[in-house]
Length: 218
Length: 152
Image (cartoon, rainbow over all chains, first blue to last red; front, side, top):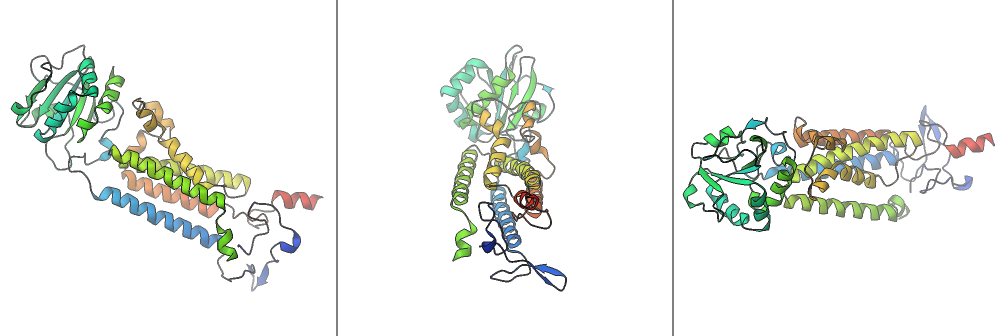
């Protein structure tokens, strides 16, 4: 119990016989009697302990969360999956992948993938979220290499290879932490302008989020 | 032991448990979406916001904020409200910066390390300046009860 309180733990005033004894005046320094005497009041010690403990625990948690980054993540995580249009990179015209895709007048999603991520995405596009996405937008898949092996079930999906990274550069996609080709997607509005771009190593299991961005663009 | 028995009230203990459980659930939810970076940004920003408000409230009413952890949790939830809307799904828009700079908070130079420092500063401000709860603490003058008693 704090020896220096004259209110109880509910903030109510204590009777005089239970109140704190008067402070002592010793060598010009005001002190209070307490069971375990210390020059530092107990509430100060408690607060210092709370502050230090909180700082250490949260600092450790933050350090652990930053200690094992995904090599396919954006080096600056603020730029990854920002969830808002026109923030990561400037608006820029979308470059044609092949023929007229992405077509003007239709929203398009262009996925930038490595061969290892292309297969799971093709499978996800046949799922419920993928089918909804295919109904709403044109879809392009840019594979850094080995595009021949990527065969979506929907023939309207455009698949191209980008071994030299020209398309990724044209769409101003950011490089992952490992410095290799991007793994993510860009969303193009009806005017043919890139409105959203992000790294997203787990895009195949996150098509719901792509739909959210598409809704914002439409 | 009397001191240790009264150090934490039961309601405070319940609040600690509730806050820790909610924070763990939020962290796990964002971890599934690879969003731990966002978790820490909005935690530090929201908690700092709450701590500044708590400091002002404590000085205004001359007593520490009751259940401060609950206020910190409320600050966190307020800061990450757009992320909850994102699950609905509603994409972020610029006006959502009213939620403790939800969008722009990510772009603070130094990112989450800077937010950690901001949080430490806000916590230090509160812990160092909030009254101790002693109504007759000479730093804060007499409390309301003491004042009314003296006038009577």
